[in-house]
Image (cartoon, rainbow, N blue to C red):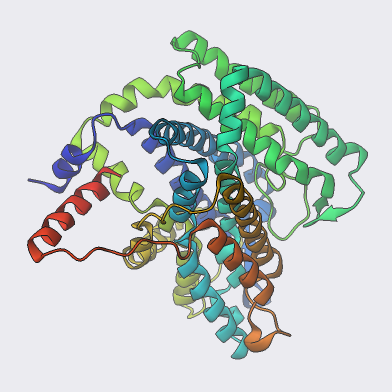
Length: 467
């Protein structure tokens, strides 16, 4: 039996393959986008880190196509709602549900940080930071997504309760209006006020607001409350297009849906703006229109295998894809095998398929090595009372998000600290991981006779295939 056929037959009939397709496709678009926007350019005979969106401003319009955060968080909302409802129906406490979700989300982050803390420290000690062309901190910038996803996951019990009692539309409408108000303050009234990361500090309020609104759209999806006829689905997409066009046409909102590295130009992602909600409506409309045809295609074993295989290691792919970029740059740019570009011209674009292939090859090898961290045992249910568990896990979420933020803001090394280690970020993140049960709290494996172990191993492999 072929691999594709085995994967097809081991996939539960009730699994929503289309949601997996959306999840995998969105992450792979992020990966390809990150590999494309970074460019090694020659300045005074020395290869330097260049950013295509800054070097060629016209490319900022392309971010309207490749910015897939809305559809990913919508899928996350749908999956979190389904998962929490099943757990709630079984009598599982919200705290134990969160511990399990947090462990699967955050455990793969640990080997990435261990690797890059050691690598960055060695590069600093040997004055070799330029060996990768791109700053080593590039490798961990995408992990902000984990903090955002952890936050909306932790709030799922509360936001789903609110959705089920209000119908959801009122919450989405109020959230959207709040996001618009924050945008006006950010782009107009307080544009020159206090800053965080080069952007007006007031905009940070939209990190939870915008992402939670999009996450709530996922609740509508899982309850089949979006339009079901093609005509209405087209109208939904057109409504999103109209809202987005009005925002961009007002000149209040910038065009780019991602930050422009190396600049402090306004953007619609860091922090998020209401433009992402409008873009999300466009993406929902398109996703609904494509669902029947793609769902039918995914019934084919080979088609489903194309989605299921990367889907099994999707977090590893996401976390390590920038490392693959740095490895390729060190292997072919620093060594002179691939000369840095003098300009982002037709020749540069023509070589992108080769560049993407090399990055994909390295990422495949990294996934084979580190993908095992996604196959984890669930943590032991906490023995704390419901109230104590809520406080502990709430603190764990805050500390984990703060630790990730410290790594992104302050980098992988602290020159004044012992061994150059980023001790504040490490301590904060570790405290959060222990509080959430990501580290520790795993039940010991029971010893079984060899025959039983063999049977259990077979079941574990089948369960992994189902996931």
